[in-house]
Length: 109
Length: 111
Image (cartoon, rainbow over all chains, first blue to last red; front, top):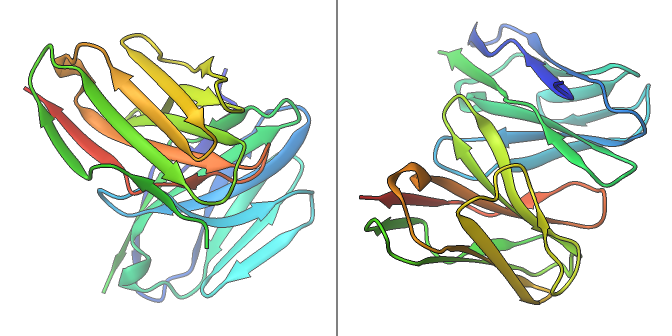
């Protein structure tokens, strides 16, 4: 059973076209939900941690939100440099980590 | 800033060779992890360690071993490299249950 599911698998946006990426999870006892950005050929770069439903975090054009079942990564007025794969992960109270397979975002100038 | 470094960015080895990949973190994290990442398969956990000299198998430990003699250093060993171990290898570290910080990755090619 998948603990973390990300959708869509791939997303193409025009520059300036806002959208959202989804991460749904099924772990019991959520300790934290994490968002990462990964550029081709590089290691994932940590973006945000969310701990409880209703929490929000922002960084530049990115905003992450959390509910009891899912998280959204909202991208406002994206630029070509926002093109990357965005990974979601969760940890549970047993210190187990589960990663999604990512959303590949392409922003077209 | 957290820093996780890996010994090589690119590595080419021959089938049957013993391969060592080393990872060092500077944040005094208890937990360290080794993953491999392949197109369409995402991140797959090979081994992790909760403390010095402790190790736990992940999802795909076959063909690999690890060593953690010091808190800051976690090594991945391919006892006899095979072509199906060609992959991107990623090391990460974290405090217990919290966000993992990744190294830059090692692209290993086994010919």
